[in-house]
Image 1 (cartoon, helix red, strand yellow):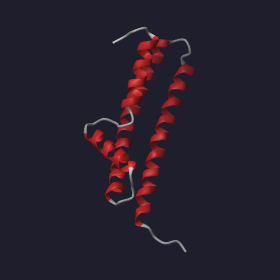
Image 2 (tube, rainbow, N blue to C red):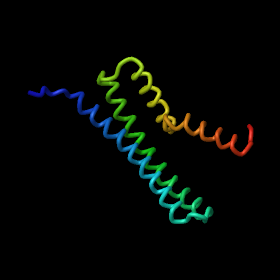
Image 3 (cartoon, one colour):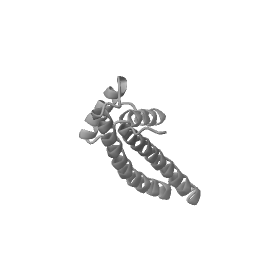
Image 4 (cartoon, rainbow, N blue to C red):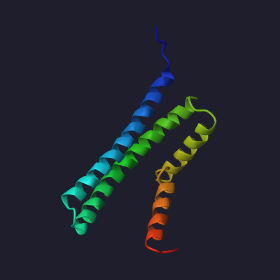
Length: 123
């Protein structure tokens, strides 16, 4: 017999949101590859379509991130999270309040530094 745990629902929703975010990343990668196959030597068209794809999926990722952090905040308030998880969720809530996706910051900084190194540019 399965006993009902009201906290399982929030945990399940959180897992669904994480999978939704991962799905968006995979869709974006697929679309980028599709453009590169369609225009293999036309870098102008690739750049144009890549920018459109980035803009579209960035908006969707922001919406998904907000939903995910909202669910995390419910989990925090209901006592599902413990220890370091609480600190991470508090950080995520703070970043979403500042209209920043929490897990983009470090990645974007890393990509920027890699791009600058590749082009021998220094700040």
